[in-house]
Length: 362
Image (cartoon, rainbow, N blue to C red):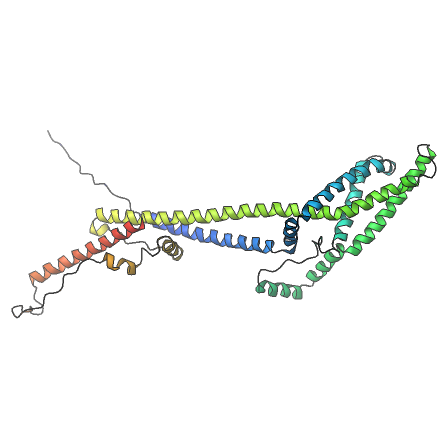
């Protein structure tokens, strides 16, 4: 009987892919850090905006509570206005009286926003945001000089939300409400629904819309403050997510490279001399992460040759008279043996250094 035996050798996979993966993770961590810094700079710039400062000041002084009560009164007056002026809307807009009310409230609210710009406490639209740096000021000034459209648009914005525009619009609007209310009162007097000389019914819609315009100023401030709070919370959540992603990428990159160092030592210990793998160096970002994590660079030669990692060295023995150097070109067997032992000693020293580095990394 013939038996055949096959000797199988277990091959260990090279751990170089872990080093490449760690370098890629470090590069992605750097991109995440840049994104986080940009978001953080935008958040700081928005926090320094004069409008945000006004919101914080109103919250600290508790004026926001008074503004909230006035905003609630604004909506109550709007409801009262609908109850009083619904016949006017029914006369002029019988198909959609509610749309007429919404249009009138929108015009009154726009007048309120414009009139609020005349007060330092409520002015929100005609204030400029502070620049992040002096370079941003230079760029903005250059854009203003090169492109005249910026100046024209800024002037148009300031005029569109100026107190003069609000005062003119409020005057025209209230006059139109008075004329419509008088026409409605005349029709009701002719129909016998109102007595003759019902002056209060003529002026009541005008008075209510005037109150709406005044109450619309703090109402717009409260609405803008609520929008700012929601925006800040959303930006804070985005910043937290960006910071968490950055920290996760850093942690995974460091742990992956540490795992690579340990596997490299195991691989070189079990591999033959011609299959040993050299250390894949970390990139600059990963090297900095390793230094921040361990307090030193575990891949640097300077730390590998520190006193705690040095092997004991035997002092050299001085030559004696009996030792005669061999002639040039002749082969000395003892010298060849010593050279081979020196090479083995160097390989062992290199392996010990990698093991010490891997142990310290954990």
